[in-house]
Image (cartoon, rainbow, N blue to C red):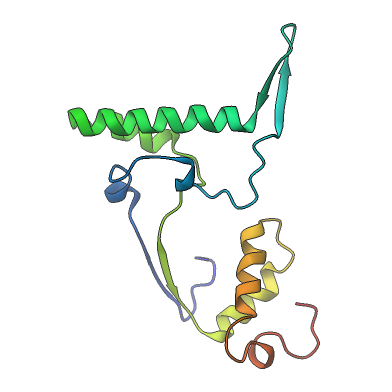
Length: 142
């Protein structure tokens, strides 16, 4: 969203200030099109399968343990390591303000994007008042 800065304002919650405030669970991460049964690889010669679910379970356990250690000790080294290994899918609240011209530009440039979040955003744009006449007009393939 930061690519579209003309006529917009934005603010968000700070990882630095909010990360230690609640337990870290799978719900803290973007999981809209998550498939925990996805096989990552087979380990030979033992034929032990690793799945995305197993990896996420480990990551969340490590993150939550670091968070707890930080809260118990106030040792910033635990917090710093938590920041380092925190996955990019960490959810944060973000407030964004723009106008229909900016939305139209976003729709134009993100309509075929591989991230499902952009498709969800465009679907949401279709629900806005006057979307047909201001965002999705002229029979364009949007």
